[in-house]
Image (cartoon, rainbow, N blue to C red; front, side):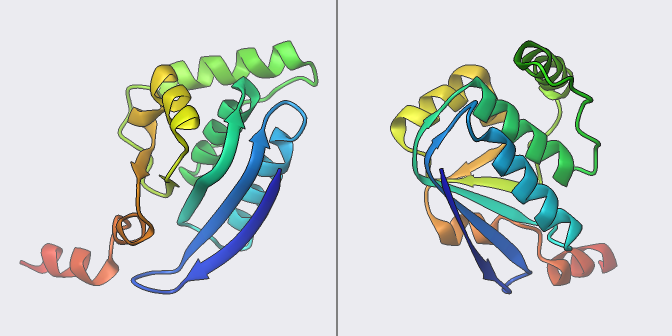
Length: 153
């Protein structure tokens, strides 16, 4: 898996993490670590560009969930080092958070048909907003000026 970062400052600072290749048990921790680094360094709004992601496994889905929880300000579930322990902790956390509103600070961009089918099958289309085009994804983040104007009316 390759990851590249681009940034936009308008309408608000947004980091775009471009993910290429496969996201699976061999590399899922790299995505979590990259997201933790971005969050620690002040990133609060993130677009995960899945345009070139060709495959996602259950471990990859768990990593997406971990990123979502991190950007919601929730501490990821404790997990033991075993694969079964990781999958069980992620499953419990996904089930607990499934009925909540979509993630406001992490959006998904243009997943391939195969990846999108997996996201829909597991119910991640209700956890994440998914956009086909970058301008739509960027504009989907709340704009501080508009939020302040709405609050002042």
